[in-house]
Length: 166
Image 1 (cartoon, helix red, strand yellow):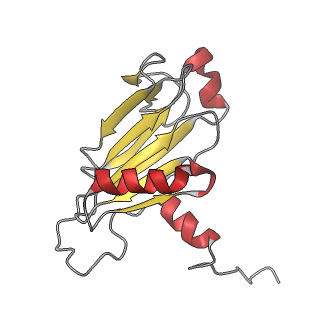
Image 2: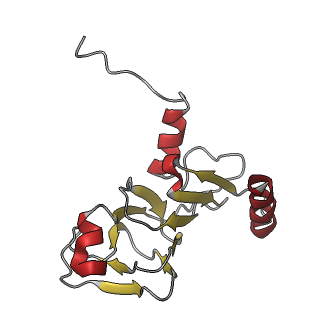
């Protein structure tokens, strides 16, 4: 069975009792939250829609994909290629980026003259300052992504109905 093997390999690679890995709904992100508040985010990079992700400075995003995709940073925050920054191309099938400053970083696939981006293959990472306080015994929300919050919401935790329209 593949799932237990994956868990074993993942736990062996992490080797850190403080790391926590969570797939979001749709399995587009695997978020591994480290004890220092940073996150390692693996993105299954394909044509689909993506939720925004919140990380801290020092976090790393890794894009894994089949051929016919690429990864660029889009400073415009949309599908415009003005000022884009190369991360990886179609032949690489993998690319990584380390967040080193606060702000929003937008990644997009520019294959087919931006058709993949316009079809939803674009994602925003909201980068927060590095978390410099001691995490011993405090793992409240450090490094959690919107994807993790969505998992909690989907599972019925922290989900509240809006009763204003009733």
